[in-house]
Length: 93
Image (cartoon, rainbow, N blue to C red; front, side):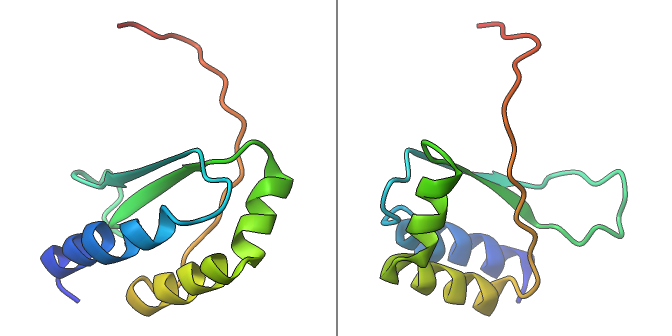
């Protein structure tokens, strides 16, 4: 899939599907525009906010969650899931 087709699919097909996940509080698609390591192979990074890890697990165990994962594998292939706690060091408006 070309980069352009990937971005269109991610935004217009997968994005709306992912927004249906139960308990999802925030969803951001970050498009990669520059690579310091051209071997990474990433086209983008998605950020999803849930109240806690258990809420996220339940969301992905749901029917919509299973559909979302299958769709992700269809257009991304291999992907990595990372759990993180945010620690704001600096925030300027």
